Length: 223
Image 1: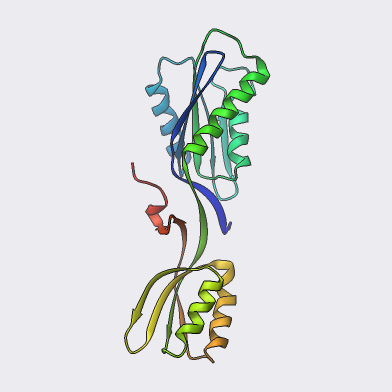
Image 2: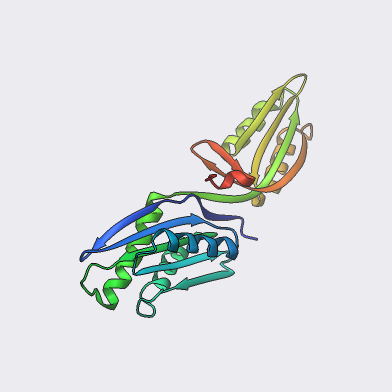
């Protein structure tokens, strides 16, 4: 399982023009081949009058499913270069359609590759990407003598605090990347002489966007 990867939180469109040909790239997060196919069909209906609607998508933790289509362009000049941009950016669970309105001037093989690649890059720059992590929602309960040491350890690792409760004891809930969990537990136990109680609540995917924690369905912006 990949513990860290990049995904699209909100997909956008961008347009470039090459020798009067318009290239409109649209990015969309997708989580299955059916979802990718539906998105591609949606774009073909939206831009029904365009000469080409080329597509590419990457799905799966390790790019298990990758597909591309030149949609009538010379073989290898559109879909594969578009796919290369997605994989080169390290993004998963994403689809892109680049719509071309022909401007009357042939671009040649190299020109088409550059145009389709540039259109995808422009759409990615316009979209909102997040770093998705796999981690643990960890609860930590301690007395007031141990809270300062624990807060220092959390700050050192730049961990995300979900909530805190101050009663007769202090209860914290924090998101910890899976690969850091064992080390953090050991550090907290040592710092508090074993007085802190630690409990893993659940393992989950999450991301942080502008200090907002995204989890579950929140990892993709709702249409």
